[in-house]
Length: 214
Image (cartoon, rainbow, N blue to C red; front, top):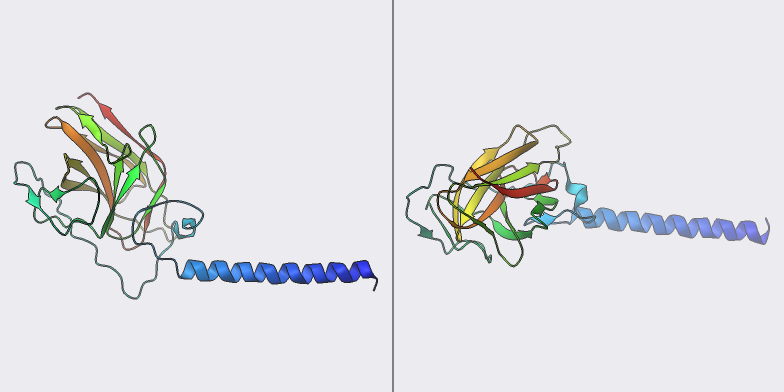
């Protein structure tokens, strides 16, 4: 065996060892990855898209109120997760999720995100700013879920925040895509929020928020 052949064998051996180390590191990193709040989809968390999460200590899905909150008194809620947008809930039966994360849009396009069980993501224009809507206008969010690999349906809750107060939600389960529509009753600053009501993370593709005249 000449020098060139020996060098090739050594180089191949080193490359194989490096590859095994990288795979081991990646596997350990994924195994220890903890998704606790809404995150933008990226290379570090994309392996979770569509996956069933085996968790020996699953979280309890929050019982977020689904009834109309019109004309009900605002409830200050000191247990609200820290966030720059929502300071209270309109109904004391509303449990505001395990975490609240601001998700910044670009030209009203919502980014791809992944939402763990019980977590809330609030869409904004940046720096916590929302959409000014007038009475009778319709504020909408078009969305699309990534499918689960096991084919199960996932429940996505979508609701609104008016002038910092969190209101009721609408549930979207059976369809992978859909549209949430809110007919505005009074002028104000509005945000749309999403919450994962499934045990496994829900991954959303890019969507769009827009305002139409009624």
